Image (cartoon, rainbow, N blue to C red; front, side, top):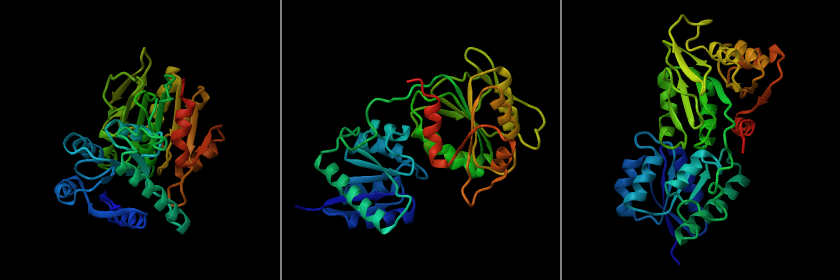
Length: 343
């Protein structure tokens, strides 16, 4: 029986090399070609005629999700999504399966010999099953892991995250885990607006929830995420049914605009049920506001920084002595969803 031909599409040369190595070592699988983006892949599909396509979620230009939609509309074939944000059960994984992917496979974060060999066996088996039709579009198989009914329903609590440049990846992982009914969420960034937009651009087409820049007067309702990174205006929350996001023009607070301290404080003063968190970042913006929110009965957490990341916020929060969850990056999405789940 001829080997299954697979084409690897990923904008990272290192990832293309890694997955080519993995798949070439898998039994019954041959890599017939690679592509660095959607345009490159489109130009090769008719020539290479792969049996299976592996596709990165986040790529420059047309995102992997957008290209997945195009492939399903014009040239349906088994597609396996590969990304650090497509672990089984995440909102991104569910969205990929809804668009027609047969499986979502997480990129390996470690490459020890044992882990590499395990990945070879696992991914090779998935590719062969995809080519044989055992895996159906939408992940209708026992090992797809990301299909089925969502088990999350927002309890209405507002989630507010303060994020520095070093915490952008953590924020993206939280949003990738969200469902269409995610908690109403505000993410305030202390980072260059261009860096924020570049980080979330690909996710705009991959999230089941609605994602947008903060707008004055919008309702804070489940299924909506608002990003605050305009350095000319602060963001606060106004009580109501439902609560509303307000943009205000005033001087920076302790050198920051938008200010996480001001945002957390407004939610505490409004007496709204909320979950607040400080993601990794430099400076101490948000520390005082988080303490105010905690005193008002809000559920709060702080991200424990990696060895290479700034510790300013983390050390300042710990010095406050408040009761809060102390979480590593990988634990944050599950903790937030668990704390706001009314299902």
